[in-house]
Length: 516
Ligand code: GAP
Image (cartoon, rainbow, N blue to C red; front, side, top):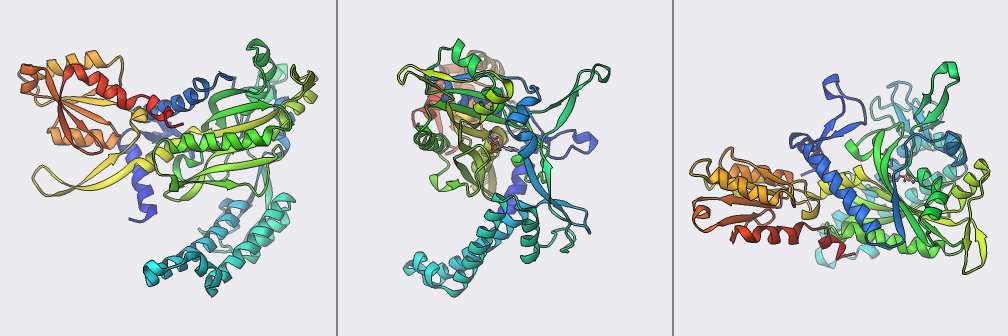
């Protein structure tokens, strides 16, 4: 199946099975804003718990906060967001569509990569096992030609970005003959900067309303609380402050479902370190975060690091963790060595001394910061994309059938078990309720008595429920039930009294933490 089709199916599945809905759908929707539905919110909460506990429970020197979305507007002046949190935009005069100039160029680079990939695949098929990809890349004329075009374009693009040269970005688009995907023309406007922050007003106009911003990242809420947390928590460097919360960006190009949204959620850690040690900590956090991703078991081939060519104004090192989505490798998490930029800026703009007295060095300094920043929504999409599978199986009447299953890691699954009476009568429904009443304080359980047992299993597969427990007539006699495992579809007969232990062993976050 084409990856594009897989993605369309995934989006449809998210709606049909109560994971994600378009915001304001009955009013025709609001672009790039989404609501999490009954199953989606459970998965989202589990993702947040996996991240939060991996920070707070597993690290003695990390604490959490929950700062307000509204903050003093000078914070965004100090952080550089008012002046520099921009995307370069360009309009096509014929279609009136707006694009990010940098994204148009990145897509052109991806086209050259695709062409190289296709040549390699063709050759691999032709030469079979004897195929040597490295040698082919070095010698094949077409590959060398595409590689040269890629190298030249990449170098020119990085320079234009580093110089903030908007005219050069436009010139690249013209020279590369990039056309508008809607009108098919090259009738472009100049490239302009567009600030991504949403603003609103606080207080009534008569009192002189204050222009405030909806935060575009949660990080600044941590920086401005650094002194409070360090003092009240008696924190010693190195230490971290973690936060989960909403962020808002007026994205020019909002596409690919919940990948790029205007209202989204971040999980951010600011880790404060002694100046000069930041790159060591940066390397440590890079590895720690990759382990966190890979503990989910989606295959190490599906992750890669992407080193930044252009560093943000506050960073001296930066890397992204990328995941292979159906639309290609894309950023899920950013790890930045943010130097002392933010704390120094807030020190200057607020006039308050923001320093740490290091008793071992007997000196005061502005701490350096290593940040890890991951989008909850992108993590959600990663899990849905990696978990979605269509399998050919034999149906109840012996014919071939397709089973849609979400192989969500059990600790993150929205519903942990469904308890199903084989039929409603003969006391089976009451027995099922008794089991749920005993387990519901430990696990998110679902009761379902409608349709054949096969159909009920399928409904649970489609939302990723790892266990289905079926109560039948034998259960009434010997207090045993069948337990069906989502991934293998195998069934065991077990004592009702053993259910708690069997399930707890599989759905506990400890299973994931043990791999970190
Ligand atoms: N404090 C640093 C920071 O905000 P970022 O790379 O701009 O860095 C961090 O964002 C993460 O937030 C990204 O890796 C991504 O997962 C998520 N993110 C950023 N913009 C987003 C958007 N428009 N929609 C969904 N997630 C987004």
